[in-house]
Image (cartoon, rainbow, N blue to C red; front, top):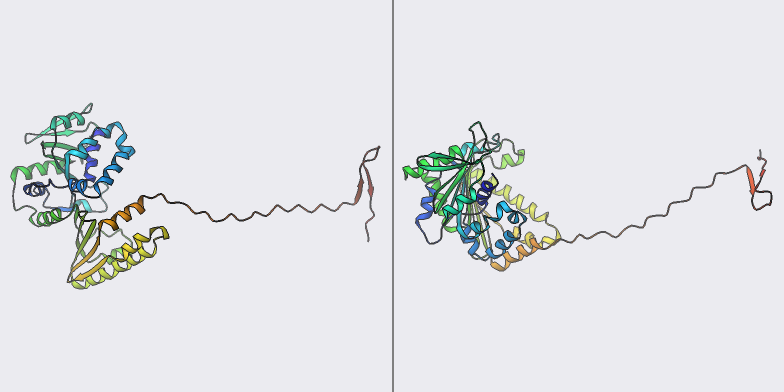
Length: 354
């Protein structure tokens, strides 16, 4: 399971092979038509961007990467992986579900024999589905529910997730139905083409039922959200909220403006750059759509990274002088004690005044 977890960790990074226009469509065709959340990371683009050098350095220094189970996947992650897309069905966004079903699609250029050897574990079972081999970790749940599966479809595609999601993805690949998930695929393809990180979230009506009342009220009119981040010229971020009507959009825009202003005020003196950055966030409402936009050039983005990575020095307040403990007043005695006599100390009773 440890080696399997290493492949699943690649879901934190990834999304399309540069220079191949057909790859995003092939990848997005695997998505469920009921996808409620889709997250993509254009890993190869990020590695080749100005922020890539710093990111690779952080990965190489990570204690996790130095551990034997994950060390073997370091080269695969840094050199072979091009993209990862993570999707969760709408039913999995219910807050009452502790472990939502997840499908992870990893695109790249893989040596399948090498990966099979890396994933091979003692007691591992191989399950066949439509001529595709599904690797089953030996410690999967015995009840057959939410079981993890990994499938090496070919030298360019790995899919992983719970059993139901992986099998359904194989069915969609075999069917190759162009009408499935048309809307979410169109939005995902547009975001993936222009951004290095992207996300689409369809918000179910009961998703905010356990949120704080103020937050639940502010987001009550939101139907979906989209996020795109590009590191091509520094960092350009755009987030779109699609609401049910114009009034909901105006209310949401005002609420977000208040949250951004509060976040800027709460920055300490050592984060002046972050505070100024928050003030530059543009928030606009046009019809039922609310847009958040922020653009930083390379110098501004590098400055923020350096500020975040710099060790924080704790400034201690000057120590207050500790008062010396006061000596207890000697108890009044009714005798006078004379020391130094040859016969020893002598105590003379004193008469009390009336």
